[in-house]
Amino acid sequence: MRWCAALAVVLVALVVLTVKVGRRSPRHTPAAKPEIAEAVEPAAAPDGRAPPAPASFERHEASGIAHVHGRVLFPPGSQPPDEVEVVAECGTRTFDAAVEEDGRFQLHLPPGHYTLAASAGELIGTTPDILLRGGAAREVDIRLAVGAAIRGNVRLPAGGLVASPSAPDGFEVSATIAGGEGDSGVASIEEGTFAVKGLLPGRRYDLHFQGPSVRTLTMSGVTAPIDGLFVELQRRATISGAIGFERGARCPISDVTLLIDGKESDDDDASANVGRDCTFTLTVPDQAAVVTVAATGKGWFLEQQVAIPAQGDPGPICLNPPCRSNSEEDFGRLRLTLDGAPKGSYIDATLHPTGKNSDSGTFHSCFGPDGACAIAGLFAGDTFAITASGDDCRGDPVPITIVAGDNHVRIPCHRERKIEGVIHVPEDQRPDSITVRCAGGSWKPLVETRLFRITCESDVTALEYRIGTNGALRSVPIASLAGSGPAFVDIGY
Image 1 (cartoon, rainbow, N blue to C red):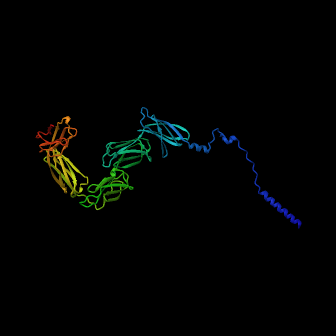
Image 2 (image 1 turned 45 degrees about the vertical axis):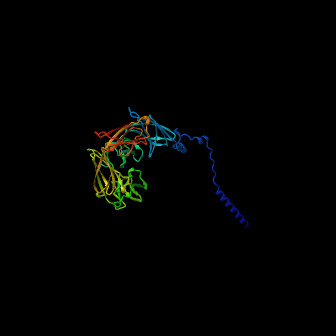
Image 3 (image 1 turned 30 degrees about the vertical axis):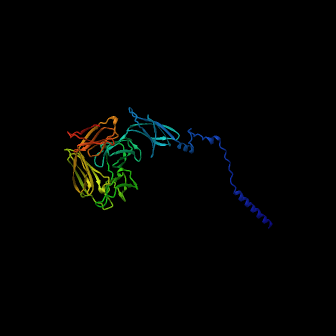
């Protein structure tokens, strides 16, 4: 039994030792230290070429600045124009170069593939697909030639052709590279035709037609060159409207204006004064799709939103309905005749508002030959004082209340005569004042002069004068008029 127990202990010890030996890791031979040359400089390739640069070096080169300079070469025999433009295009980005008077240029920009383009008036040239590396300099020349053109005819809304670039309409055309913003080429307009010259053949452009009275039109993706395009422009939309008010009363609204996104438009034609008939017309700013018409007066604030169609005008609007259409019964015409004026005399008449419309500040006038003129569009019921004059003739104020239809008024004309004269006063006795007048009329002071010229009614036979502030009132007869010239009076002191 003792031998059996001893043998069991020995067997357990052998098993434990076997397990420990099985778990031991294998031994590795340590690597040799690298040589210094291998750590600093990579070995050359078998064919003698330099090995590829490490990734860190490539990133440094790509992040550097590329430098490019060169010349713009003009066609033989041509003079360099005043303005030359050079750009570098890279996808959707464009970089402007610094250009000197002799056409030399330079650029400093991120590395990449570029197309260099130069333009000078109707001349244009490109150098495509230029690889610019970071930290490197490159010289590039760009040769110019006469560019392509886009031509056509343009018709204004009324059907008439554009007369010239200085036409009152202010119409103009421009071209941009398709999808871009900067203007390209040289645009011109002449007698209903347009042309944009100095464009790159095969390149697509967007044409823009605009003016203060037309809607901006854009023709996209037009490829140069092309001839025979036809463009018809639409005038800007107008909004016509009225404000309802009681018959016989005054229009309560004074001003109307257009609001866009809650703000007043800067266009001059987008606001207006309202007429006495409470109607108005507004021009809609270019490319506005929805506007708000705002009308204001003392204690009145009216608004209405209006959708603007792509073509034509929106329908008339009515603020504070019902709105009435003004008929002939609302208006009167005033026909004036000057009685007693010389044959063939002109008439110059003015209507001064009185009564309830005296504070309106609205004056009417007319001028005509042969002593007659007319004023239309007067509101029935309005009152005025009429003053008129003619050749050597003046009429007294005549009151009138306008009725619907024709109002005939004859204004008696008082004949007048012009009086010229001189008052002789010695230099050493110069008084503090000298005044003259038609007998019974208003005084006319003479300031730093002894000469005078006044107008008197033809039946006045005497001229009155006073020398000195406290001088005596004296009178001198006026000679009867002989011929058509003024009478002359010589007054001694």
